[in-house]
Amino acid sequence: MTIKVYGSPGSTATLRLRACLAEKDLDYEYIKIDMLKEEHKHPNFLSRNPFGQVPAFEDGDLELFESRAITQYLAHTYADNGTDLVLKDPKKMAVVAVWIEVESHKFEPVGAKLSWELVLKPMFGMTTDDTVVAENEKKLEDLLDVYESRLSKSKYLGGDSFTLADLHHLPNLQYSMGTKVKRLFDARPHVTAWANDILSRPAWVKAYSSQ
Image: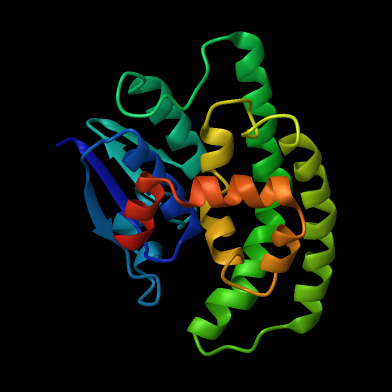
């Protein structure tokens, strides 16, 4: 076994990477980093990720950080393993790339704030900021209108196949669907069908349940 993942339970970025590894049916060693003890700030970990964030990743002598960069490496390097998460047709891959960017720059900022306020803060005994929640609910509502339009034309964001564009949404989507913002998804039938589909994938269930 040459692949190692340094991550933390509950971390959306760690979950994103583990979901990809599960889809690619790859074995790996999982080293838990205790962020409450600030192990992500220790020199040993900073040598793997100088920004002090999880996950960090090793595949033999290759060391990487940033979950979306790692998933793209895995999808291309292990293309013949498990689920094909990239499309070989350049035009189709360009569409997938667009929605990878949408997730990173539009869905993630909103989803991460809602996950923090509605899921993680209560978990740590902290008080939810209702103003931040309301602001981001409105942003999510507008964003999901765009998703509803897109998903009325194709089963998945990148087209007819499940790809990294969908996979990258899974952690924040999982958290959101367990909170009051689920109603925003439920109000949009194509978004709901897509969310239910990808959240029920065996690879995701495996990754999420094995934290």
